[in-house]
Length: 317
Image (cartoon, rainbow, N blue to C red):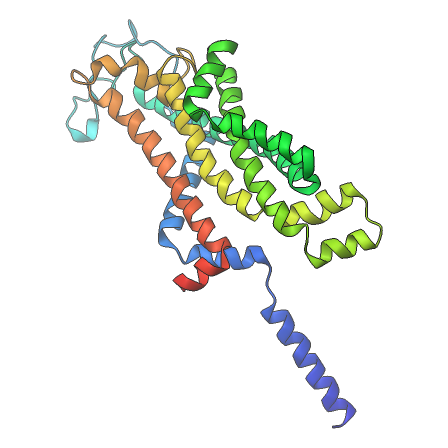
């Protein structure tokens, strides 16, 4: 074979390798896009994020504004939609007025911002602390692993919502304390996931090679092991956002989370629960919003789990 032919074959081989080699994230996105349910969940999440970012422009009223004395119909609670036959001389309230004569639709839009903030902030707190504890526990093992995991087992021995209620009771009611409580009770799940991943990665050849080349503990753990052990954490975090939003709504419903007049979905449910038969729309819309957001994160989390697991992805393809 002439040198020109050898060069051509080598170039073709190199190009073939380049075309076939794709990153994990490219493969994950390609698999994720094939799952319609995951795309539906992702689309809903993006819509909710858009609503949260633009709530001040989308909301027709100030969510804190009491409309007594500002409208002809002072205490009307039924929804009024002009396109559906509501008289044009009456102010439009798509979802009616709540018990304090505030526009329910505006409060629901602002509640999107607060609920997403709760979900992302609590999961971020839990992931950061849980990742550090799980990584240290899995890498060092021995008595360090025993102490950290037994502490996690103690936290897992209590139902998460009951433990969050106990923590908020001690710290005092309020949204910030509710965020801390939900974050604390979520730490063990992430710590155990990271520990299991670190245990499986720390014995791989590239870690042994780094150790043989004189890499220190920080470089090995946080530079080599941890980046290759985060895949299960992504799935757990996505599903954890849904759980955090649900727990925050439950605490607010009980009066331990967001305090009136904060427009939070759980607090809106709790304040209007006595009107479930006289004005069911005041309970229906916040409950529907919670259900849709939780369902969307669950759909996305299930899709990410399947896309990041080669065995599940191969079985479904």
